[in-house]
Image 1 (cartoon, one colour):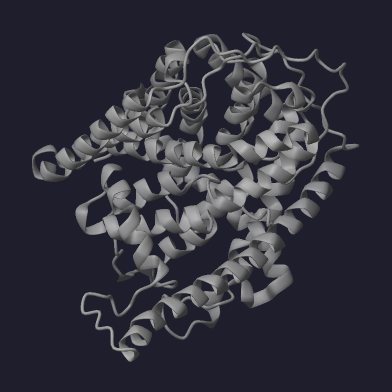
Image 2 (tube, rainbow, N blue to C red):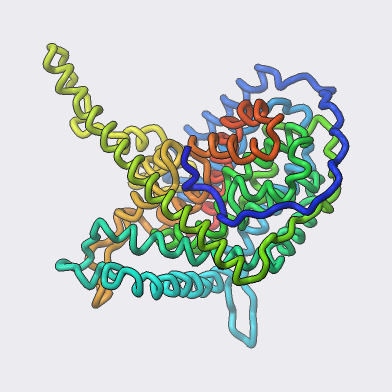
Length: 503
């Protein structure tokens, strides 16, 4: 199973600590969620979705997204293992933190020296930093690959994309960003930020220290790296804690991948915002889906020991990060070669169905001549895209990208989205082709695609987290698809909340 879409690539080890005592057994004092409750919640979700569709002209795009917030939340509640046991303080503060973060980033303004600044403008300014990171890696790529690092130098037609652009433009930033984050980790910068974030959520949401530290670490680390921060506690985590850790890994991306996805053409503000919003969102959705029934060892505390770097110095950390980044970059490239080949094969097989049935005398007048996975995904996930607040003309395109992300991975989905972006002349920077979706649709798509929620991640977590706690492999296997569902729902909920605030 490939690990291309997962981790912040550095390897760390926790501080040596005495193993914590076994966790108390999980005993439910509440019966499981009644079937009638599930049916009722499902009926409300369907009714809300249909109402939003038929009233779409009256409520507008923001109204669609507002209804989508309740629908996505309702879907998770419908499948909750024990809705009666939910701690609504956790849910309430989680929703509040998520909305506060969205408002701060997308709407808040500050006045400095008589000039009004918005957080969005600050993040747009931060795009310069991201572009600089890409430019820094380009300098190294130029030295190694020469003109191949500048496809425009060899382009005969403005805006034409050559097959080598991915290998020589998208992969080099992984090496530099990997080394950079490993150096930050070596000097303890990331650990201190994670500790502050975790303390806030533990205090407000009442979650355990271990699970909250791991969830906070997911902003910077991958889904198998963040759990290393609480490695001594993983074997004895309650099922609810373990599930929160897994679902959060699905709902986030690693810091190293942020730059890569922005390099693919994703909206920088959307990528940065959704990574932060995913912290409270994935945590409270996890507790809604699987409430805490046991006694966590670090309940009400964020004092789980933070790991220290095992590198000798900054140079050693940079070298190790570069090596890990190289393995990750090669893994990304290999994974895309294989998965894109599979997509082409399935598309070819789907294209043979109608001629084959026609050959045996079965006329299929309504069958699409250009049936493909892309089209099927578009049909399946169009309602989801609509409830994110996407324009009706774009829902099938966004739905196709969402399906590609879930079934294949977010790398493939982002590269498919790249084909829909506006095209500019590399020399004059004049617009050659307008974007095939609206700017709002592109932004909301970036919110929804920014996460590791895909089927391959189930196996990745089983291997990565299972290595830390071999005795918990059966639990990991049992919770894997459920964590995928909640992690994917968290990205959709982030997109819907953003859709309420975006114009």
